[in-house]
Length: 202
Image (cartoon, rainbow, N blue to C red; front, side, top):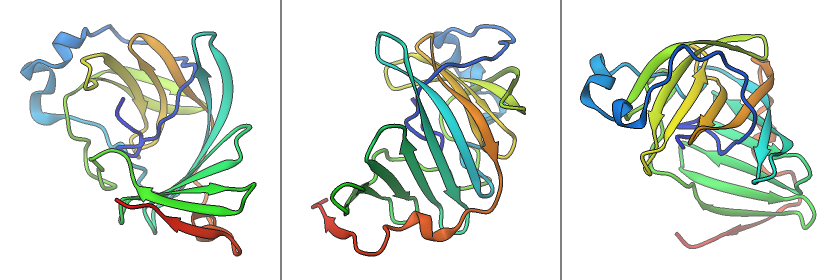
């Protein structure tokens, strides 16, 4: 699945979108599907604070995940309900820092993934606009794309780069339940004082 911040974000959960019409994976991957290279913005154009409901596992369990983004630093903070860890991704240095709030450690590794669309830059890859949606009080555009396994993924992105929902391989995986564009304090994108930092080999 493409990430929300090219992000996006490895989030999963239920999705409530009225689809305009279905598009099969073969069609989405064809040259005609990407006419004029039309693609969404997949990185927020400004600070954002979004809470998602995720659908997890074969039993269809649900939990919440909070994503915050600072446009000043190009950093993302992700916290998952019930987890003692926080993920801080720096898209300028392409590093991921995992905070362990139990042991007060900050482990740094190369960020997963190879692509990142800078704010205001359309996503790479093959996309097809298929309609309009409305999630968490926000209007969004529905886009079809195909992952590396040729499975169709449907996203709903706002015009300013916020991912509000996704369906992957025909299964609903994520839905935003609250959206804020309030400025985010930059200190939350660094480890708190007293954390021990460990840099793993690249």
